[in-house]
Image 1 (cartoon, rainbow, N blue to C red):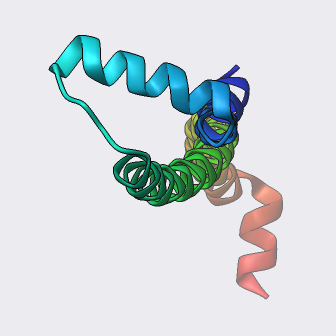
Image 2: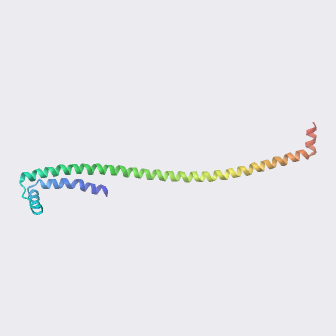
Length: 139
């Protein structure tokens, strides 16, 4: 939609300029100037005004084109930034899930280490008090 509006804004000055260069357009412009500003304009004055207006319109058209390009560029950057943000959110969710899994695994490892320590203590106690362990210690 923005491109359509910009296209119209760029085309309108050219159409106005082309119309003012016609005899009918100059006549209408003279009529408007007489009615609006109470001014009687000669053909040379009108021609000079049209040239000045044309130059100003060309400059404005270039400005509009430049701003349109900048807007398009910024829209593309915004789209890319939104996509990057979405990717970052997905990665954050994955990291959060991994963090939870990591905590769970650490808890399980701690439990297993305590079980291993308890079993090693039990084994040491049993070795100490079994006759077989005493025989092997005596050798």
